[in-house]
Length: 143
Image (cartoon, rainbow, N blue to C red):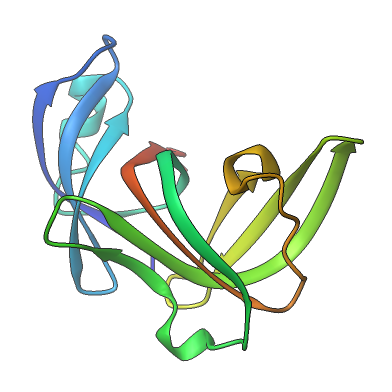
C-alpha cells in the first residue's frame, strides 16, 4: 500500500520542501514532502509511490526476530516516528560504510539507511530492525 498525502502545509527550508500530513497503512504521519508545490497539490488524497528518508535517527534496535505482520511506519505522540521492518540487504560501500535496505511489508515499502546513521553497526540480514527517528521525508516518484 503506497503512502497517501492527506494535506500539504507550509513551505519548509528549501523551495521544494513542504510539511505534509501523510497516511501509511492507516497511520497518520507528519512528514516533509519534496517536490514542486503545484505538482504536489495534485497528489492530495491520492496514494502515491515514493522513496523515503529519515531526517534523524535517534535510537534503534536490530537483530530482532523477524515480524513482518507488525512492520510499518508509526507516528509517536512526541512527533517522532518508528520504522519497523526487516533488513533485506546490505550493500558495502567501503570499509567504513554500508547501505542497509529495510523492507516494510505493510506497505510494501523500502527505506535505506547508511550504517553511519546506525552507529556503524551492520545489522543481520533477514532480521527485524526498529528505528526511532524524526523527520520522515517523502520523495514522490510521480509514476
